Length: 416
Image 1 (cartoon, rainbow, N blue to C red):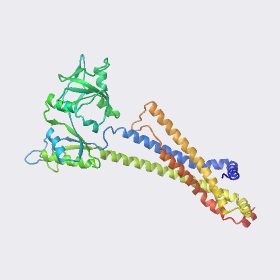
Image 2 (cartoon, rainbow, N blue to C red):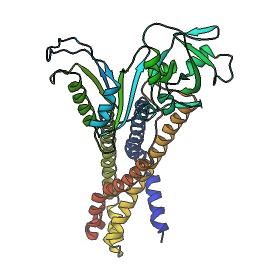
Image 3 (tube, rainbow, N blue to C red):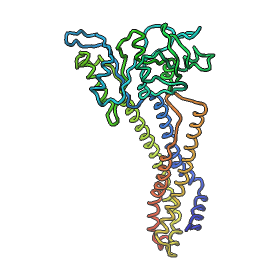
Image 4 (cartoon, one colour):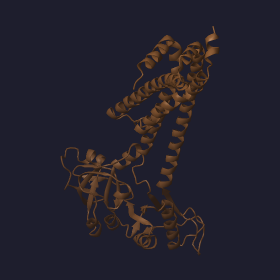
């Protein structure tokens, strides 16, 4: 049952010392408020940076560079060319690879022509597997398929920049033909790149064609520019990265100690580093906020000690009339919980409200402040903070309540 008299007494006590109570509660309010804001800002930073990861989180890329060490009679400075045979060797010798996507690019300065319009674009040769490494949003038509690869079809998938410059007045570019270095390709799909900033700008002006077609049409027989890969589930990307590079070094007579012959990028390692940074930011946010909350709790505890001191005679009368130590303890703790709980809950509402407002405005107006994306408040964090408030309130009133329970009625009644 709810003890109305006890709650009325707590209300009257708080009302009697409004300024003191408000100043004491502000420390708890500010701690929770800052906790929500800092964690929301940390989540916003995470959202902004994670938007940059528009590729598979465990992707590995391997490309060739120049050798730096003489080996087996071959001079340093030799440039290596990877081939379709290397792709077959990787599939046969590195079972840890789940997805293997060869990639290439049309070299030189040239313009892509459609009718009377022309402009410069990046033309890349890709395979269907590339979508498992670097997803993209196919808007109309389709992407490259295996039949395009096998038959070396002259088909192209164009991005938004191509549509803007070459197909400005066209409702549907599907089925139209564009000329790349004098060779005609039929447009079979359009896409919108995922991600943001520089990656989106670069991808928007890219035209995709089958890599086998690129090899045949643009004098790159059996040549691969780089490999994009993902490992099988449970296999670290670093294992695939190391095994593939070792295999390629052996196949192309590269010295085992030559670390410059093949370049590579391990997205999984970068992703883990970023996740570690986010964990550090979250830990720092909790540390700062909990420190502030503890300061507020200490303030509440001190105020409750003063309250016990002021009400010593009253507590003595209660005990003389038969009040149990539990009823005295519960009264003080309950009053402490009310102060910390109310102040913390207001701080929680203020923090979540502000974060939600910023999030809605950034989403509505598509605002992106550098690496900072839309902030978020996790429901689990809000519940944890609420539980923390209740525990903090009980701890803040525990020592004063214990002192009140030990008051000797005879001594208390003698106090002036």
